[in-house]
Image (tube, rainbow over all chains, first blue to last red; front, side, top):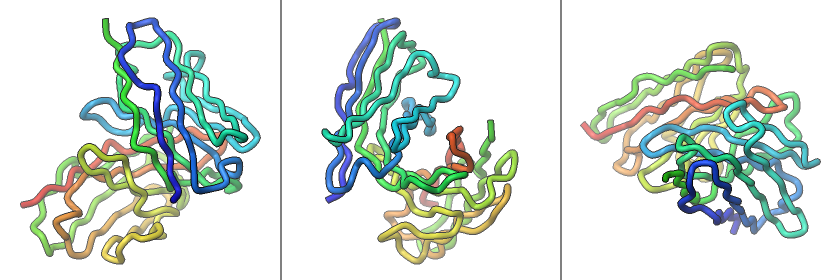
Amino acid sequence: EVQLVESGGGLVQPGGSLRLSCAASGFTFSRYDMHWVRQAPGKGLEWVSAIGTQSDTFYPDSVKGRFTISRENNKNSLYLQMNSLRVGDTAMYYCARAPSGSYPSGDAFDIWGQGTMVTVSS
Amino acid sequence: EIVMTQSPATLSVSPGERATLSCRASQSVSSNLAWYQQKPGQAPRLLIYRASTRATGIPARFSGSGSGTEFTLTISSLQSEDFAAYYCHQYNNWPPTYTFGQGTKLEIK
C-alpha cells in the first residue's frame, strides 16, 4: 500500500524549533518530488516547501530562511526542520507526493499523509 | 504569485442534484490545475489533475473542465459522501510557487 506517515508535531513556544518527519512506503521514494503543505485550523491549504529528486529545495516567502526541507532516500524519509516558529505557523502539516519530470510545470499531489499538528503558543 | 479564487464559498445542494464549483486564476496556468476533496478530520484527496483527468479510483460523476484562467469541477449527481470541502490548486511552474484556492464547502440542502 502506498502510504505517507507524518510525525514530530507538538506544542512549541514562539521562537522555538521543531522537526517533522514523513515516512514513505509502498513506492520508489527517490523518484518523486515531495512537498509539505499546511492548514491552519479552520482555514485553507498553503504550500510550504518542496524538494525535487535531486534534492533541490524551494520555499514560499512566508517560511524562507526559517524552514528547511530535506530527504533521505535510503530511509524513504522526508523532513521539515522548522526554526524561529511563530504563532501564525500553527497548523496541521501534511507531506504529499508529486510525480517528477513534468518540467516546465510541476504536478498534482497524488498521495497525502494524515498530517501532524504543530501548535505554536506561549 | 498566482492567486486562485474559488466560488462560491459555500454551496448548498440536494442529494441527487448537480453541483458546479468554480476556480479562477489571476493569470494563465494552462491546464496545470488539480482539484482535491477534503472531509472533516481527513487529509485532502486528489480528484482531478491536468484540469480534466480523474485520479485513480475517482467516480465518473466527478468531472473537471477549463484551461487558462477559468476552471470548473462538476459533480453530476451528488451522493451523501460528496458533501465536503473542495480546493483547486495550480502547479504551473517548476521551481514551484504553488497556490491553492480558499475552498468551497459543499453542504446538504
